[in-house]
Length: 570
Image: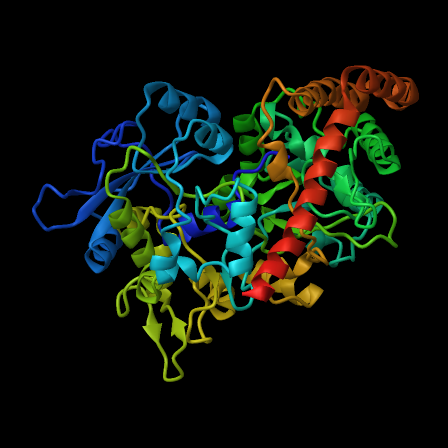
C-alpha cells in the first residue's frame, strides 16, 4: 500500500486546524537559497531554514501571525516548499542530480534515494544534546531507527511520537465508509460484514435513485495510478490482519505472505463483481481520475467507498462547508466472516524509514537542531496547536483549554487561517497530551472541543452508536508486533533487485486484472479469476517478494530482542 507517512491523516487534520500546509512560493529554490539559517532580511535576527516536504501542500503567507510568533519564540523559522507537479521520487531525483538540497527535507517516498545518495546528515551523535528532540522517542525507539538504517539516524520521524494517551478523535485511515444519511434512514443498524454493508446500500439506493437531481452512486473504488491500493488491499483487512501494507505476516512462523491469493481475496472480488453487475458500483470507477473521484464525492451522491480518509478529506470538507454534513461519512471496519476481529485502525507505531532530515547542503546543523528542539518544546507545541491565549483559546479555572464560539468560527474560516496559522504540519512534532496531563496537544483531539464543532447529525450518529468520537468506530490493532509496519521495507527495494522487480510486476498484474474481473460479470468470474491467478503466478516472483519481507520480519524481531538486552545491561 502506498502511504505518505505513518500519521498522514493526522498531518492533514493538523494542517487544516493548525493552518494547513504551504505550497512552493518561489522564494527558496531546491538548492536552498536560505541555506544555513541565514538571518532574515529585516534584521530581526530570526534564522531562516529552507525546508521541502515531499507531499502536496498549500502556500501560506510567511508573515501570518502564528508563523511570526513561533519564529520569535524559538529564534528561527522554516521557509517551507511543497511537492507540485511531480512525484516525490521524481523531485528527489532532480535534487540528487543537482547535488544541492534545502536545509531540511522530508522526502516521503524518496527517502531511500536520499539515503543512498548520502544526502542526509547522520544525527545519532547530536540527538542527546537536544532534550526535547530526544524525548520524542524512547531509547528503544531510537535504537530501532538506527538498527533499520545501518546504525544511523538520518531523519526524525514526524508522526510517530505520542505523549501519554492516544487522543485521536477523527479516524483518518482505511475503512469502508458510508454516508450518515444512509445510517439515519436505516435507524442506525450495526454493520459488521461486507454483505450487510452492501445490503444497506442496495436498499437505500432503491428508494433514493437520485441525489439533488443527479443519479445516486452506490459505491466508488479509487483506482487511479498509485492510489489503486484502495482497490487491491481490502483482502488483508477482511481476513483480520493489520495494515502491514505489503503482505500479511504469520505471528507464529514470522513468514510474510501475499494477500492476493488468500480465500478472502477471491470472495471479496466476487462480491464486487456481483455489485458491479447490479449497478451499485459506479460504472466509471475504473476509468475516473482522482479529481473526478473527488468531484463525485463532493457532489454528495456517493453512498459509500473504501479508502483512506486523507484521500477524500477535501471532498468531505467541501460537503461540510456547504452545510451538507448528512452527506459526509462514517467509518466501519468490515470483515467477511463475523467471527473475525477487524484490525483496520493502526496503533501509533514507529516509522523507522522516514521523517524530517537535515541535508548535507545545510551548513548550520546545530542551529537547525536547536530550531527543531525549540519547536517541540511545551510552549511551542501549545502555540502550534492552540495558538495564543486570549486570541485563539482560553483557559478555565481548572486549567482546561477551550475556545469560544467566535474562536472556533475563526479556525473554520480558511481565509482567517491563512493569515493567522502555521504551515508546520510536517515539521517535527508530537501528539497526545501536554505535560499538564489535562489538555490534548491538538484542539480537535480535546473531546470537548471536538464535540463543540459537531453539528446535529454528527451528535445523533455518535449517540446512536454509543461513541464519543469517530475514532471509536474502529477497533485498534492488537497486539503491535516488532515488525509492524513491514511496508517500510518494500520502500527500500530498488527497481533492479528481485524483490523490487516482483513488487512492480505484482502491481502491473493487479492493476490489469482486478478491474477486468469486476467488470467481467458473474458468469465469467471463475474463468477471469483463474486467468488472473495464472498470470500472477507466471509474472510475479512471489518467492522473492515473500522471502525479502520474511527476512526483514525476522531481522526486526531479532533486532528488538538484541536492543532490549543491550538496554537492560546499560
